[in-house]
Length: 233
Ligand code: CA
Image (cartoon, rainbow, N blue to C red; front, side, top):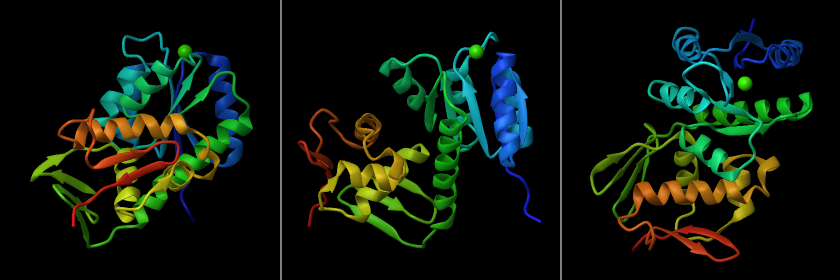
């Protein structure tokens, strides 16, 4: 018997909790819920859910961004933000805090389920692709088995999505990858037009990997087309 996957719902509006719980339970997920930020962090540590649906605005001291940040100190569990806010700055702040995706309120149950499935699928694909090789590109070294990255001998911590994007670029080093190719490979085919995701993550990678992120030498932009990891030799 396969064990049910568990979704942790962190939301303080009872109506929305009921709705999301119903959708997830009907689809075959086990569900945990809390409306409190601190409790959400505790539940994540204790129960190790397979995915977190995380409201940004919580009445507790710790809001959704805070929860994501705390959870990322010890867990790579996929996090989808539930947000009434649609400003790009909030979404980028969410990615920055370690969220994997977001759904804007009000959302349909179909939309929510599609996101949950896409994010879970992404997480599983990664578990399967351990290899005992490494990719070297100038000062950059990617240990594929351990999913670790170093620049000039210094370890650099990447979030899961950052790593996946870098891995995709590195697998095709010195080749231009189209925006749609990267979005499809890293996020999934349903994200092929979400250029904002890609731009944000390219920016994060450059900030972590490039000596001068404003003048990138590793991850180069091919305007209007895509990106390329440029490796010497
Ligand atoms: Ca709320």
